[in-house]
Length: 298
Image 1 (cartoon, rainbow, N blue to C red):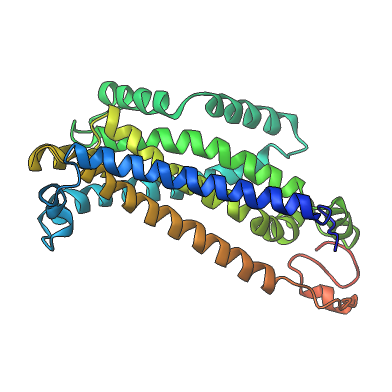
Image 2 (image 1 turned 180 degrees about the vertical axis):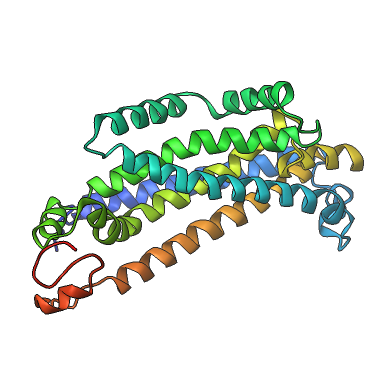
């Protein structure tokens, strides 16, 4: 049986693929065994190093991991809360017919998208130190959020613009043909459909934001989750690998949960937006905001 994407495999191709699979699994098993034996020789798998995290005690979690995780989630949530609407505005502005709107928006987006997020965080720290009354304890948090907002808003602007441009032009033409204004076309027709297409990319950017908070901990002394691993390792002594492994697992759980939720939400939105194939009569179009049944805009 053939497929639209590839031809059916013949006997030789099947044998070759089985051989490749076996070789890969053997190589993977050898790598895992080498890592295990190397750690065991260095006594990194001793129970004493893992006991603070796996021995049933809560001191490591309540004193180090939980406060760091709170700071990470707080910075990521606030950054996304600000960057998403700002990115949507910039993305829509880049599609404007007015040059005085489109060009400045393009300059802002391209400028901040080209600068590394760490540079923006350092710039934000210096800005808050020299020109504001923010305390030295709060400056790292403000700097991290500022850098994440500026960079990710520009990236989200491109995601929004690409999502809207991915829709067929017939959508806009049909909406204008029944009398909707351009603002109504964007708000009622294009954006609701583009959200479904943009959702995976938006959630992927949220995952990036969660991980990029670690830059603030490494450079700006922001007490986030990854920074707590270093402090925790120093406190318990010589268990660096155990500390960072626990933190890595926490990051994995958070980001996997976000991507799983995004997949579920995207599928739900697509099912809800499936058309029944019915054609609306002219009288029923009066329910569209700003539209009259005569085909003229209100």
